[in-house]
Length: 357
Image (cartoon, rainbow, N blue to C red; front, side):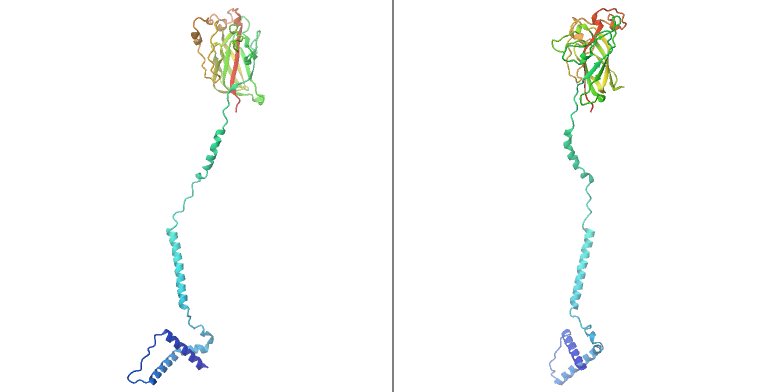
């Protein structure tokens, strides 16, 4: 049995040497008369040498039959080595690509957009709200209640200052016949509308208008211009509640036959005021022309003293000089008996403004 195994192993190794070794050189029989016996002897010698080389393998086979398969040559070893080298090459190429991308590729990280671009949109949305601004309030004539206690011993009718339908005027006495002094005071309190409380009845005033003397309020109406003295200088003290709202405002009417509008130095928030008559004169015998009305926006200019007289001409009777007018002198000893000096008249007062915002 062992001999059979040795022959099998020897035959397999011989086949391997034949397959892997150099090609066998078959020599022709020598011409010098070599015999077949010599060739067979050479083959046997070669087999014996091969047997000597393989004898360790034979011992291994006898000692550990199970390890024969472990020493069996792997016919796929070359393919496996090739596969390993190819896999290593693929990994190496991938690593080189990643390194190259990190070093040369990508460029700088793009900067984030400025934050102000994100908030620019609401500005465009807010533009349509501009036309919604409320229009500024327009000035209008303010209702008021006039009262006085400065006309003792004579007629008084302050309610006529607010009457625009009938021919009437506020007529106030100047005191006893022996005094005849100016300085009468008219108290004015503004009236609130139905939607406003009396405690908040204040207005933002912008202008006013005064009509000195008794002047007809309608065309062809009653006119008592020559029967009462004419107010030439007035003082207005504005109050908001109990506090003085502004500096006193002075108005020179120059005894103009008609309304005298005036614009206040600034807007005044007031709930009431006092009107003081500082100076009066006898009206001119010839009726003076009415000033050109310029509305209530304060665009008109009050003519200076003497301007109206110069326009009318010297044919009109001028007012008495201060030396002959007891009221102008202020002494009360002139002894004037002319009824015109006993009273002073104002046809109308108007105040223009609007409720505070």
